[in-house]
Length: 282
Image (cartoon, rainbow, N blue to C red; front, side):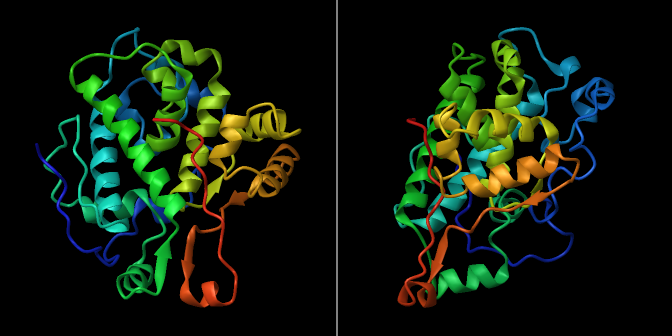
């Protein structure tokens, strides 16, 4: 079984990684014309997989090859990341990982929090990742690996909201592309995937569909507790609600959540940061 190469983090050189760019630039306005304009997967970038393009919804039981490849890369990169965050080594996989020799470099296309300075601080022990964060990374990897094993066997599991939320949050894919049933609640899938982009350290514009869902689901803090947990519970709730109100009012706010790492200086000063929590059982 192939496994991603366990090489040291690479400094960012050359073209700017996708994760360093502002997510949602150019398509955060949710224009209905734009959603219907995408006719095939070649016209859809991987950053747009979380948006629901009606023409791309397959028949039940079908798995678009582009999405399977995307999940394979996601699992390989997350495995590389987990091996760097803890000393347990690469876990045992149910799925077949691709020969992704450049997993370390591809990591920079997914996660925006590992620039050269961050990598150096972590390697010399001046930066640490909270145990809760490592556990969350392990849970996401475990769940996506189990799902990928089913997809590689040409099977789509029965529709399950928890698995759909994991796919959206962990891999940035709208669950309706695997389970047409999820098309009945498109906004929740987009919101979960958008939160996943923030969870990977990215700065993202807030689409209007996400803003409206955040106000409906988090306005009283109880309507969608599971999705709220993905934001770290109430830790980032004020930030999300403020951004949602600005978006509905016609502004275009860019959102970034607090990093989940702690330097020794923060620790001794008593300024440890609360990590994002994962509200899924996988």
